[in-house]
Image 1 (cartoon, one colour):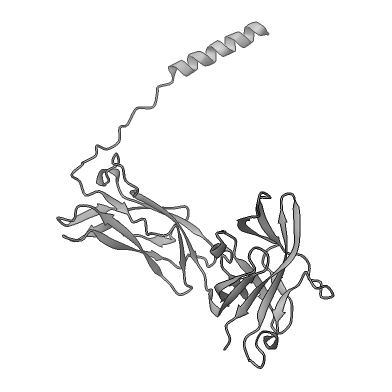
Image 2: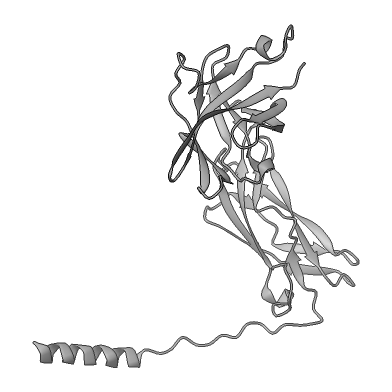
Length: 282
């Protein structure tokens, strides 16, 4: 048996030694006097389109604008027929920045993100120069129908006891309310707070069981806002509307909302503290 194993191993080595190495293909030589075409750093990595939008622009820049230039443009997407992208980027003489119009087709599904990568050939780019711009650009494109519902203040009773301006949005298609990235003013980066509401004093149905705040509490680590079941007979665990008269005496203002989260870290819980959305008085 041992002899057979040795023979098999020797055969495998022989086979491997017979394989031809992949041919080396050097990159295209850099023309230091070339146009140096690249995508603007101001392009967003996440492109969000309104429900009636059919196109968006991507900024492409070049360093040498002394003459007109046509640059091939390549588009890569994992789904066929979603985007219509021009075959070239056209720079007029004296123009160093253009907006390439990317169109979306009727195959685009609402609320579904799609990745798209645009690139220009490396011979049009100073590949070996020290610079922060690149000849390719990858973005996630999302189409949705969220529109502003109410302007107001978001009050945090756990981290700071302070408030900041926010916009409450509403999606007619999904029947969902959204507060985007509410802890960003504190330096956090969180999931959006989403919920459904049937109106009046009915409770809210939160869109997730917990939300990552992106904020740490001392040495305890990152804090998670956990949704717990509504408990109307308790002073905590309530997610619902605040009657307008409790916000502004004698005012017909739109109702506000309370989110009574449980605040946790990996080691345990800090207990229950509320967050409020209070609309601006009308």
